[in-house]
Image (cartoon, rainbow, N blue to C red; front, side, top):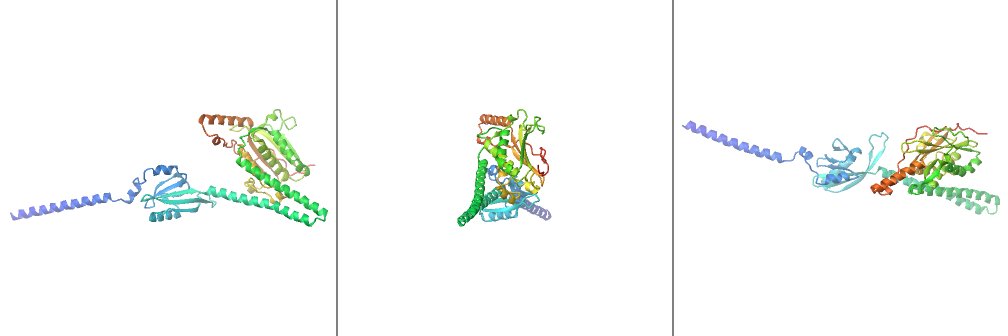
Length: 448
């Protein structure tokens, strides 16, 4: 009897202990499930409501980091800039800024130069990074690309510096020459010589100011506001008249012709085929005449004496409509490959000494480039050192350009778009081939 009672008591105690242990295990498991784990920090939807939508419309690259420095949300621009790789923020200075902001809640901003991925040329990516707390656990990083703004600012500074330098040269020369005239007032020959030099410097100053005005005008004005059909033969004649004196002084022959679509001259020998008077471009007459005049003037200035400058025009078919090509070929010093990429920059000169001797300002080709682009065309160059150059100006044919303008106006009227938004026209011509489509003149050859 005692044995049975002892066994029953032991069984009761064991059952009680088992129940207590099971209850403790259950409580422990419940507590562990409620505790946040490292995995749950990344998988739970922790972004506040509406933040995802706001980040998607921001122009800046956006990255949201959690308290473990893992990326919770990143925009496509952040990946494109190389800020996020493998789910982590790959820029250490930005990561440190995020940690500091998470610690003290202060908003921080810094500008950084980051290596550009994939170029292999050591180019830097200029960015502005701003870090701010987002709630109690998250940090928001906004990164804006400043590379293009930095480039434009550098161009502006260089332009101002170049303008100041170019203006200072003739102004300083005029000042010195005027003092020389005053000192030589009793020497008529010296006065005449100095006065001639003053006239040359005054002309150079006038030309520089005028080209600065022209460049500003073609950059800011819309040439298609007052567009009209402009006959190509009239543009060529005006360009030749503009350079007739310089060409005569150097005994340079200027030959002009209208080419058939296949690239061969007309058969009547007069430089014009039947109906060539109808060959016209669509745009601002003054700007187009200035652009072609600059090309012909450069050809004359950079050609040796007793050589020839050729002007050829033809109509070609293009996907967006017919284009007019006007090519100016010279027998000058040519352009090296490294200079071809920069000749359309403002104030850039292939041969600075020669440009100053001819009175060049370095703005002529920049004006040509802007005129071509604003008219929906382009300008290209083919050149070989000591063999001459061919500059080709491609512009929309008058009929095709007018049709496109009318279609665009009708489309804007139907859709109610703002007129200014529809004025931007992208070039319709295909990229220029590496060689000139025109027969180049022979290598520098002295004509009898």
